[in-house]
Image 1 (cartoon, chains in turn brown, purple):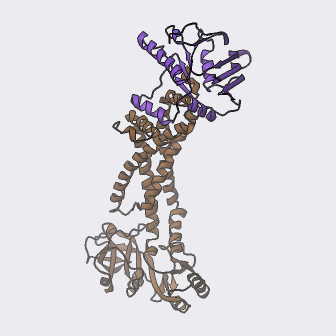
Image 2 (cartoon, rainbow over the protein chains, first blue to last red):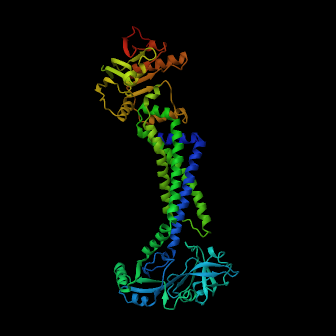
Amino acid sequence: MSRIDASRISGTSLLAWRNLSHDRARFVVTLVGVLFAVLLMGVELGLLLGFARTTSGLVDHTDADLWITPAGTTNVDIAGRLDERRRFEALAVSGVAQVDQLMMQFAFWRKPDGGTESVSVVGFNLATGQGRPWNLVEGTIEDLQQDDAVIIDRLYAAKLGVTARGQTVEINNRRARVVGFTAGIRTFTQSPYVFTTHRNAQRLTFFRPDQTTYLLVRLHPGADAAAVRDALQTRLGRVDVWFAEDFARAAQRYWLITTGAGSALLLAALLGLVVGIVIVGQTLYATTVDRLPEYATLRAMGAPNRYLYRVILKQAAISAVFGFAGGMVLVGGVVLASAGSTVAVAMPPGLVAVLALLTLCMCALGALVSIRRVTRIDPTSVFQ
Amino acid sequence: MSAVITLDKVGVVYGRGATALAALQDVTLAIQPGEMTLLLGPSGSGKTSLLQVMGCLLRPTHGRVQLFGETLARDLGVEALAALRLAHIGFVFQHYNLFPTLKAWENVAIALDLEARGPRILLADEPTAALDGKTGQGVAAALHDLAHGSGVAVVVVSHDPRVEPFGDRVLHLEDGRLVDDRRPARSSA
């Protein structure tokens, strides 16, 4: 640890590194503290983002410009019914190029070996593919042309008692056959999505042929989206018309905020931040107190306070960098492990950057107590 | 030659009221460049306080301090005083207080990193206290040579009689007062 070319780095960097590496046990404690904090913050924030993506996954994976939903709809998983005539009313509005029906309804899934599970039946327009499953890894969309065909995700196959394509099950006591699998389409409600045609979804969930759940609107190129949305709202009356991104955010807000799930995750991440600040603060303070006579000597020689601040902040930064690197290795392991589970931990580059910033801030905050202590150093103490 | 440090009726009082202790009382003196001044006196006579005042480490309770002819304002902040020390004053401390985490030359590198310029005043607190006779004499001679060779004003607080022959001027303090200020007839230099 001490083999470092001191001639190439500044005095404050050299001092910071040597102060930390001199007491390896304390340095390790600091790094473990930072690492634990990064792990906790990373996993909790990753879960939050993963859940957010899950709650709006269906909306995000369509290319609709606008969503027409039954009035009062708060999220994509739970909604009432719309009459099909609404579709024709929507098509009559200027700027509207295409309107597709999308079904979403909870149902009971009876496993091949008995037992039931709750599922969310998603029925989409096979001709346009609007609302179709993504990440299809077995079977094809065309396989859904058979009346009783459904596609489920592999993550939930075991839960639904399915081991291979071709198996038959019952949905709401009606026969269905699994013709394909997707990979990684999760559901926040833990009622797995079961994709099928709109017509089959109506049959499985006892909707009338003239009923649906959502209408997905594509606009003509160059159409004024806000104006078309307002016109649709006026024309259709008792429905809600959303921009797709607004509906996605509404779904995220509903599940993460109104259910308290998001608050719990944020609180746990905050806890990690606090733990990190406390551990870094304690160990940096102990290191600083050990070096007070030497710092007093520097002050007596005329070193400005900012010189000592730089030493302490660099100690914090070194702890942050090493702790962050170690923490992210563990977070990466958790992310990889979660890829095969029904709970996803998302870790896009943006979140990595946020975590890095949080770690730096956490260590800088931890250094404040030490900075306050060296500010009060009496340089005349070197003569005592 | 003009004095580098001038003290005019300087006093330092620690504490207040009944517990107040006068460490320095009405000390008036001028430290000249190019000579080695010895500061002698028994323990508690105020030598260290005087050194701290001259070193811009301690503000006097009363009196006036001038550095290179400029009077130090009483409200000069700690950072401004530190800047003055860094620019003009060097120290030799009795306790080295080197960073144990650094090698010897790295400690020197830290001092250089502070961008301290060559000091025009060097204040030494018992620089030979922990040295054997030969080394102690060597250090005293080096301080004397520094004063005479580079024009630095060297002030040495010492109890060590081996240092006395090297002093160009000897100040004697007792009970916070300057009781003697003499120039020995013959210097070893």
